[in-house]
Amino acid sequence: MKAAYFEAPGKPDVIRHGDLPTPSPGKGEVLVKVGAASLNPIDTYIRSGLVNMTLPRPFIPGCDLAGTVTAVGSGVSRFKPGDRVWGSNQGLLGRQGTFAEFANVNEDWLYPTPAGVSDAEAAAVALVGITAHLGLFRCAQLQNGETVFVNGGTGGVGSMVAQMARAAGARAIATVGSQVKADLCRSWGIDLVLNYKTDDVPARIRDFTNGLGVQVWYETQREPDFQKTVELLSRRGRMIIMAGRQAQPIFPVGPFYVKDCSLFGFAMFNATPDEQRVCADDINRWLAAKKLQVPIGKTFAFSEAAAAHQFLEDNTLNKAGTLTGKIVLVP
Image (tube, rainbow, N blue to C red; front, side, top):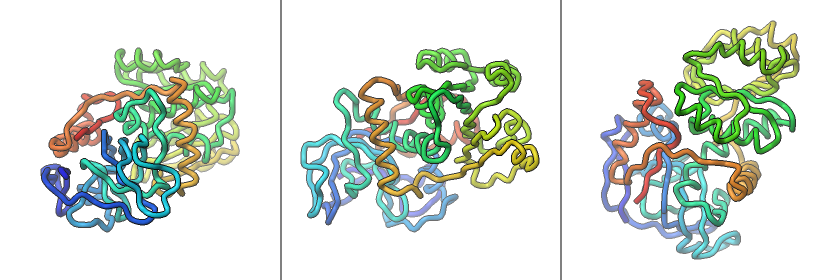
């Protein structure tokens, strides 16, 4: 099979594209003919060596995929050949990734793809959708009628947070950096869309919440300014952090605890299969009902995986501002 792979961590140009053996499914595994995969920052961290994980050699990167089951191993009960599936959690913790024509995946990490949802959409929603759901519902236990704030309303995780909040009956506030992105957020029904370059974000949040603050603050920035954000939390507000591996910002302990606030930090790949399946069930229901729109910003072939990694790093690390939504790769 054709695959993107590398032999040792490094810059994006360590990724090669060529022939590797097609895997065979073992016990509990499903062989998926990959229709689409998507690229996430964690993929670039693993490739660069920033996140040190034991990797098989050669290593195929990629966490997310969607495609069609072609074979199943012994003991598989959830899927059969011909089923359309999507999933995440590949390319992590010693598992091979998804930037290949075929991927072997344990059935615990796969979910049925709803009718009418493309492989590109299913792959693009995988990691970011599960991440958004875990933060909002497992951690913060978001309730109907509450207000959620998220940075980056058209980003991978941010777009899912804002739309899931609305799907669950909450109000959503999101920031963006351009009028085009603001229009996209409003098309999803986001209640308050703020341009962080031109709007007085704290003042607008206070006005929107009648001075009470938001119940759930979903922080996607790598260097949060807790001095500002804690002030904008409501009493018993919950804050979620899921980015910034090297960050050590100042934290205003006093203002935080006197309001009975809570802080949750998590990494998606620490969640169990059962926890993630709860997320996937809701994601599938919302996708089928058209309550989740998956923004795809750019598509690359697997043979262009090195360029895709570079493009993502240009946007996440160098703030190029040329990406709205997810990067998808196809065979």
